[in-house]
Image (cartoon, rainbow, N blue to C red):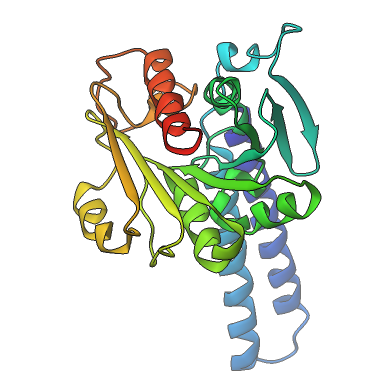
Length: 270
């Protein structure tokens, strides 16, 4: 709520400033303002309104719950550390790492429980911290992580809109990606045939557009696998509460995340 209040206040102050400036300009003109000045004033006001609306939109987000925030509170492994632009979950793995793009407007920390489960199965994990919690604004984040770390095999992954970002990166840099894991997501362009794709979604997911998903199957590479989690929903991959418009899960988040981690390990560790 505090983010909404601050965004509305910022919008009001900016709009007030814009009206004050345009009013001052009008009062100091000795004759009727020319057409171009009217256009500039209108553009200024429209930009102000648009910027304020965008600020309000991105400030309303899904927060990580307490369980997620306390995932790494103990001294056990895997361990969590911060890197530039991401979180790093260091497990028992040595040659394979997964780079994860969060869902739109979801705290990256909400995926701590899932990433820990994956790391426990032998795949180190990075969680991208995208600008404004919108992974699509920084789809190339995986490339920067790959430049800094040396793993033999790289998997890119994402949830919902984050999956679109992951698929976008894999399409632009297929020679750097061995696997693509989409959680309740689908690619928007052809996936290279040399990339192994794993698609996972819940049977009760009401957010994922099934028609679009089915249409996107033509973009899957030949070596693809689909796992449907019976009783799972859209928000069950993360710990951020219930997502608007989602179906009611018939299994716990923990069980959905365990099955997801198992599917990833089976596809890339066996």
